[in-house]
Image (cartoon, rainbow, N blue to C red; front, side, top):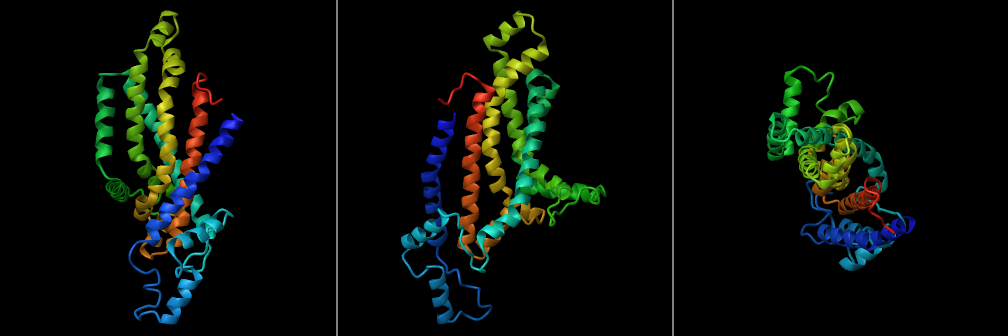
Length: 309
């Protein structure tokens, strides 16, 4: 297992280099100049533009710019943004908030999604199965910004905004509950449908019939045998989804005025602060890769037949 983990960590290096290379090209090869808007209503002076280009290596070819950026990145330096703040310090302030938001969403989709999927799977063809199928289809069909607006309107209409805040500018746990539920709502629907489909399939398998023929109780047959195998693709989805939740929090953070990574990336794109965009997205790529590694390790825990040796 240790060799497998080390091999995967080494494999991450070319992936990170390739991802940052594409990001850098996409951000800095786009038309438009990053110093535009820095001088108010007046145009920037040639001297200011010259200093700006020299400070951020923008007067050099694009590949040289990337090579200089990569050299710093490999030393753990995410650079200094166009407002003379280190990107690492900007991310350090905002990452805990986005991490809490993503964890609330992940917990929501794990508890509610798996429970709904199990209920629908063991009651296949009955009312609860139809209810879960239809309700998840409705949730999947509605964009997250509409769900967020509806949630805020419902809380305000019910007069519960003192208990459940509809904005989260401070990023406290109480303020992040509603945004977390909104962020995880789409994933809950996918987890419920995925759990139901796999559980129904496994309940028809030979090993489940054998377990029942041996006299095992219904709860043990489903809980220990069928559900365990059914959760492997669900765990895979949730692992990948955690990275997507952190990256996809841009819309949710805008709706609820959260000072997190999503809002930071949104503002950096608007301000053409390319160093901040590349640094923030590179950290999200790292989260994706680490979650993929954790998911692959969990495979062998859920199914001992899967070996990484």
